[in-house]
Image (cartoon, rainbow over all chains, first blue to last red; front, side, top):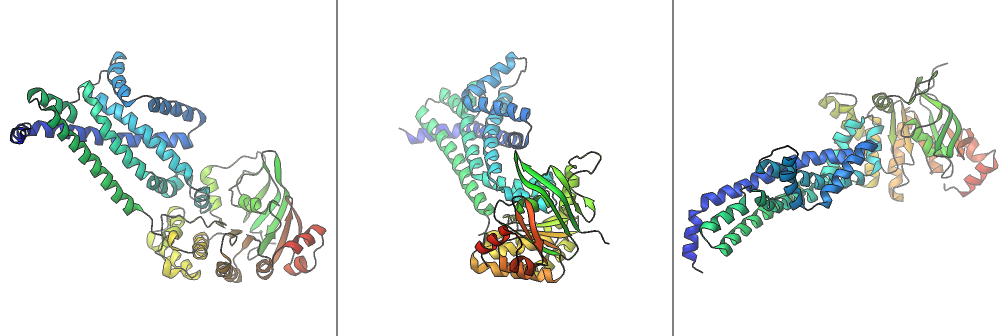
Length: 220
Length: 254
């Protein structure tokens, strides 16, 4: 292996690679934010919704969780276009990952809400808080705290799942890498670089998550 | 005659098919301290929870200061709106067996929450009131501690401050020392006694017979969803009329 030549190639490809990394980050962050918002809705429907609402959301959740993310991505791109909804690869990718993320966040948050002791709600009611206030001031802060570790996991999971978007033509890090390899045929080295970047992103997420967890921990 | 602060009339409560309250009547005047005793399953905790509207009930009425709570009165009995119920709940203060402090808030935060969110007091006023009551229960120094940093007895005293800071018309105590280690029971009972001495109206469910004897103006014996006997503590404890009460007292701890 000729390191000098490889680094020369890497240097030539640096902007393309950075753009790929940028796309991976943008799409991940966007999907995590949207997925979390949707996931909160999912959790609220499951815990507090009426019977029909619960049923509909449950079906949605089971479907999403029963389908590989890969298939979900293909469906969002090809099926939706069949149905007349023409999305760009980027849009379809965000939709697919958002849905994927929301199923995780929803299930996780639902568990956290249900795990809260009943006494918390009762104590809140007893001082005269309405249901909304009870949720905002008592239940949500505790449930969200509980949900942080799993949420961090989901975020890292999502970054990794974003690699699959290369198949519908989203020029994220993997597709960029493949395009570079087409010109500079050093697959081993460039895939290794891509792998390292993914590792660093996920590792940083995990580190940040740990820190957030520690800061959120209640003194005892 | 003045309006009783609490008036329970013919209260019936069913869990599914099982009737746990079979027509309870109880009246309390301002400053009354009433203890409810009875074996577990007699309905005493359920009755207390009905007064705080944590349980629904199928028949009968509860009035606080003359206001019918939980349900609209005749001609049509209907559950009141959520916001109405929340307001009516704040007329009573409840202290639970398991303390139920909010773990993500400091002692001070626990007490001020209701003052700022339910009573809509400005923050400085809420803090002033909260500090006064934390002082009163001997927890002023720990006002910035989280529940996880407090002993059971300390948590329960904060819970008492949280309930009483809302200035309720009646304080309800639901076996508040049952979850405490024996050496922590007295600090809580002493706080309750001093509140009673100050003229707070209190309804207590308790297993501490000695305490019930000392603190109450009246003791109520519940049995199988009914009030079997009530009277001054001396009468109830020294001279029980029914066989059931005599039996119960023989097995109770003093």
